[in-house]
Image 1: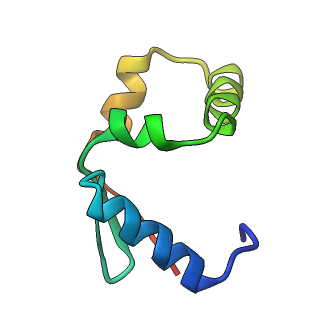
Image 2: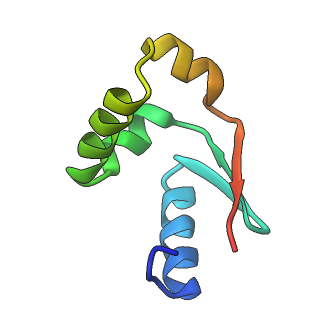
Amino acid sequence: MVGVRREGVTEAALSLQRDGLIRYTRGHIHVLDRPGLERRTCEFHQVVRQEYERLLPGSPAARRAAFPAGSRLSRVR
């Protein structure tokens, strides 16, 4: 879907895991340090976040409740 090879995703996930930002096992990603992970993102993270807020307004607290740090976000294939 995002136009990258599986090896590239694995390499990036393992790098984030080595830095203690996520835990990555068998296609499952657990966010351990959301603020740290956000600091590692490119400038497009902020663009996507602003667009998300524009399209689906709500308080930051409501978003954090929907996607708490440490929760299993999705299965990577």
